Length: 163
Image 1 (tube, rainbow, N blue to C red):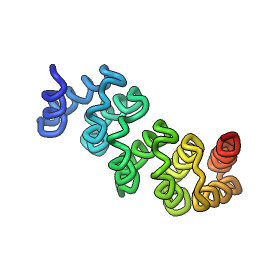
Image 2: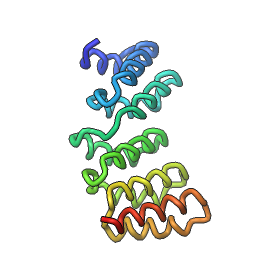
Image 3: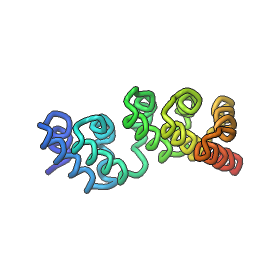
Image 4: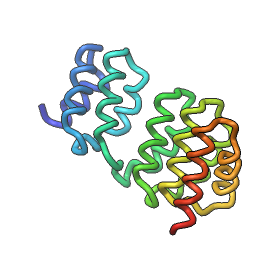
């Protein structure tokens, strides 16, 4: 199945067709980067579609540079799984996603979703965030009573210092 057909099926197919398309993308690994936005949307689909969409995102690797701005927008989604994966992909992009560090700092300070806060701290470290807001958010996270968040914030600050 060619990439246009898979993408069409993921976006407009029946639930079973969408699941099949997401599974196909999961098997494509990093070559599925062309479908990153559709995969993020599929995270909130039926259980089967969502499971395969997440599997595809796990295999994706860094996102294409053309997707960074959209990922910054999707990181602010009110859908937790979509936001989580958008932040994950921004972190995988590293320094190339540094323009999104303010968004991640706001998430780190403001969301009630602990997993999303942890992933935002990780992503800020990966992109070697250098804004005052990002560093402040990481320092606050490093002092969190949530042990994993505290560790993620501390580790991110160490990564930033290494520059």
